[in-house]
Length: 201
Image 1 (cartoon, helix red, strand yellow):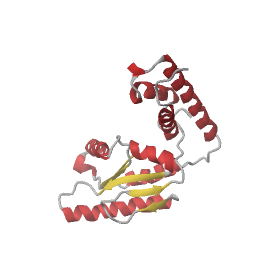
Image 2: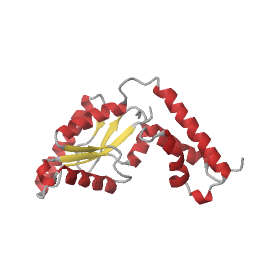
Image 3: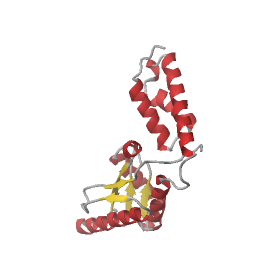
Image 4: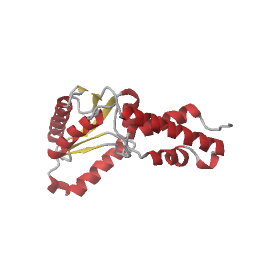
């Protein structure tokens, strides 16, 4: 089999997509061949390798899922996020690919909720690159903010309060949280490992 793709790099990307738990098994193959790689440069051998490697990774994850506890790290994270939403703090999973993308998604959620009339007091999110690191390391970095308050002092004070609430809720579901209290630093959550059941599970 003559391959033109970088097998180690592509294998890692397949692993990240499969083990993130956000994608259906059937979608991972085309995400690799049509989005991650250049489809015009792939040979038939490349495509066959991607198909086989994707199937192997999906099968391995399904076997692992059977041994997971009923409540995974993702489930506990979502429990904290759900409470944040109850408290009018936007909490988003996998919000875009960068901090800027995530901030755009937060603004969209704020507008959809009714803007100022929504009573939203802050936000919390992680983006796709954060998710990739969490899959590999078990550590997740969260961005957060105290909302669209014009006065700097009030906004900063509210951001600290939002950060403290996020940290408290995450600790409440059993995670170790690292945050200095500095609003210019993101909150780091030690998940231990990232486990999320896939949508096809």
